[in-house]
Length: 129
Ligand SMILES: [Zn+2]
Image (cartoon, rainbow, N blue to C red; front, side):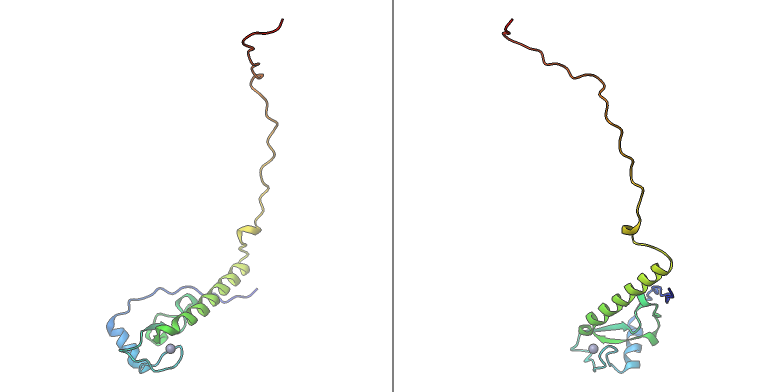
């Protein structure tokens, strides 16, 4: 089964200078919905257009400003696609989930033997002859 090998890219630091440079490159437009971001009134952040977990580069060209409200939908899609890519890679490499690995199990234990016979209870008190 062919698969596209994707790895997670290491994240670099996001300095204020870099944030401003990315904002200006996109003129404050959200990379997720395309809408204009009001930098002072909207909650926003720098988004990786191609997610790092999908092999996206941590370069300014792969980053852009995005509404915080647009984050959840993109993150869910990114995580779903990354999980599918990892499933495909595991299948291509023959890595099976633990539930499909069957062991021979333990052999049944031999019957227990007693070290001694049980102590008979002492008969105390009056006994009929
Ligand atoms: Zn948006």
